[in-house]
Length: 260
Image 1 (cartoon, rainbow, N blue to C red):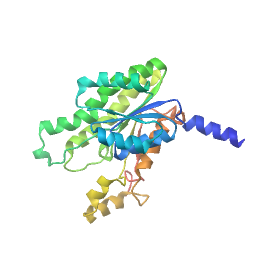
Image 2 (cartoon, rainbow, N blue to C red):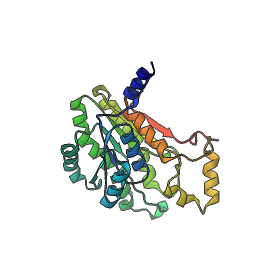
Image 3 (cartoon, rainbow, N blue to C red):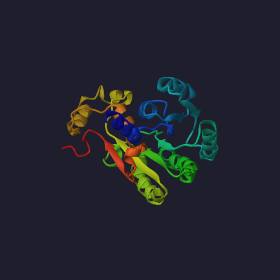
Image 4 (cartoon, rainbow, N blue to C red):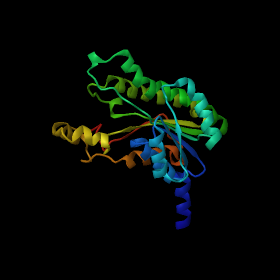
């Protein structure tokens, strides 16, 4: 009985035999996602602009992971990139659109170029890469596409209007693509991380007690999350355990979004 239960769990949550591509996988949440997918049995390719960071991350991930250079703002290169990844490492069964950037300025100082710089990575580049990957998933009978949304998809945060706009757009992307591809067994979902214990979070709050206290006051569980919390959420959405889950934005925030 125990052996049967173990096999059932492996079938439900295991990713053996699947190839995952994680953009922005060289650090932060992307690296945590890549590690979790690899631990669940997937072969993993991480992509980003800094090869030295990717090489270090590949060593951390292990499990035969690979790294490839990618600039999502160079949209003319994305079709060739997608082909190169699949020729080198196999068809992409799981695509995690994680790469991101931001420009932090008061709204009145933001330029069109500032907005484009953010929107081109989070939305246009992610959509174009997905357009290159998803036909193969359809042809093979299914796949999983994930986008990384944000708390700013739902709540206001000052000085990052481009980031807020892009992350809010991703919730619509998920709804639209899931409606278009659900009948072809490609599931499209997003993860919206709450406040996660990363170097960026610590840098932003270490000398700002008021901000830290405000954040902690929202989180019902009384603690910030860990990168692993986001990694395992990605594994769930990629796995057979989530076979009936599409069009959703999974908020992983310790209850902050509904906190009092």
